[in-house]
Amino acid sequence: MPKTAARRAAVGAVLALAVVGAVTACEGQPVAAPAAGPVVVAIGDATSVPPPPAEQPVQAQQPPTQAQTVLITFPQTGSGQWMFTPGSDQVAGTQGRLMRYRIALETDIDGVGPAEFAKDIRTILGDPRGWTGGGEWRLQQVGPDDSADFTIYLATPASRDKLCGGTPDSYTSCRNGSNVVLNVARWANAVPNYGAPLALYRQYMVTHETGHRLGHGHELCPGAGKPAPVMEQQTLGLHGCVPNPWPFPDGRSYAGPSGEYNDPIPEGTS
Image (cartoon, rainbow, N blue to C red; front, top):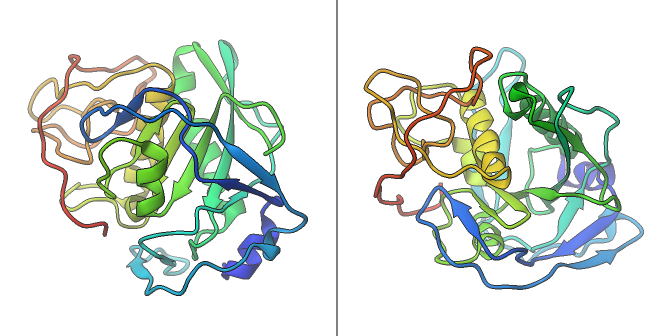
């Protein structure tokens, strides 16, 4: 979707970059997060957002599908301005505590339509193999003006670093307080040698970071050849396990031993 069309499709609201909360849970090592609050600026139309400074975009091409090849482009450093998507009446899950979330995309990202992205997020979080599968949680996407328990951001690498707090790496995604931050570089490219389709990696990154917001810590591979627990840091290494994006892959809870590996974070942002 062209950038201007994407902006018109978004709700007219912009969020200045801020960090919310005091705990960061990333696929990198845990770090302390600075305390700050959000500054919300309402505007009449998302198309009135001033364009970011000119910068050579990073290009990432998704694997071709039967329908088309989608090109996602984004700068290393985005504007820090956000397009929020409308809410939905859909509630995922039938029992448990209701957690409401908002969805925001950084305005510099092209090739990711806000409506399509929001649908992808709802589909992943609404999958019965996901966090609603155990009956502990229900999940609902709400609009930018509604009360929410967390916000899911699709962010450029530098904005990822600001939202996540702590030591920047521009590579991983994270959860920082009520921010669930998805690095667009990972959404576009996944990670090398993951051994699974891009769609499965996206399911993993959304479910993993949302799992942190729901109170889950990192876990270890339970044995060579077994599915990786969704809370294993699969972006940094599988350690003999095979990719798995779900906490309830067969309708039953699946987890590994608590802990994390001292895997290095790759350099670069692609």
